[in-house]
Image (tube, helix red, strand yellow):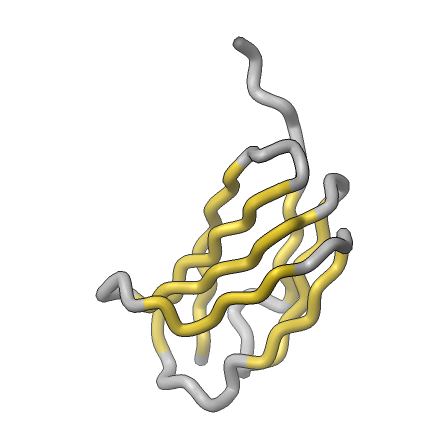
Length: 81
């Protein structure tokens, strides 16, 4: 089965805390985990753009998981500086 191509843009990355996620397919859930795997943010959404503020969290590497409307799961890294 061929994978669908859904470009995901996270900008700015690295970020000072506030960043945007843009996709072609609608997102249904955004989850962000720290480098220990602890869930630090989760939001249900129905759009193709989402603005997130992680400025209250410590600097470091985070992992963004997106669940798209077609049940495809996409993962990206995010650097908070």
